[in-house]
Image (cartoon, rainbow, N blue to C red; front, top):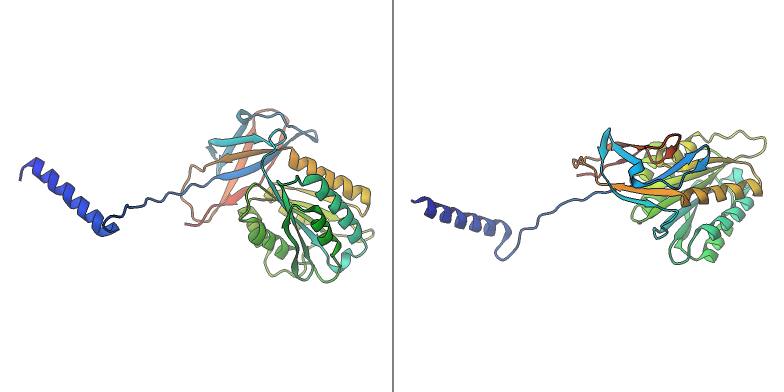
Length: 301
């Protein structure tokens, strides 16, 4: 058989093999996976927000390897990214003396931060159980009604609340995803662990802001709440039981959210097995501190 005839024969053989595998008349489908890591970064110098940084001021590293920045946005000047927020309120028995203040200040916070027809929020209370009081809405009056339904009693299922808010409510949402937690102490009765709760928040790209509300004469342990904030790129506040302190803290959370940068990249390493990847972001200007989540769990195969 000549070389020309052999090539024609091989071409026909390959054609019929494709038909036998994919079926006559069907086109083989090639599936590709595109995974983007989305980060929200806060920059500060001497306690003041730095809001004039550019894309070229940042370098992003994943497990020590520099990544190419695909998207960069200064969220102080670009307002289109929606905000999806869950307010988690500790209504265990120990909050009885301060719950009304928390409700009043949280209501004011929602009034000021939610933009009409753009942002949404939900209210969840946690005590011995985790209860969805008000599902996602941009209706401020419905959110206020939800807050006013809160009643103290029971233990403190903090880990369960963070896990369920992340996994069930925020994981499938787009844009910026925030959990704001008001609590006066540590977990006492959750079914999931601290590690599982933090992993759920990191996997859902959630930033956690924690308000550790101190009761007079009572020593509270906020170490885990502070850890959750740090590992997700949010911020922790220790707050006294006063309208002024709570109000100022909520205002600071609002400023923090408004002064972020949005950075996104496609990982160079495309071998995904559900492992944790550590993120390091550097800024070229001196004296600037950055706050962002420590890393993420890569998708499963």
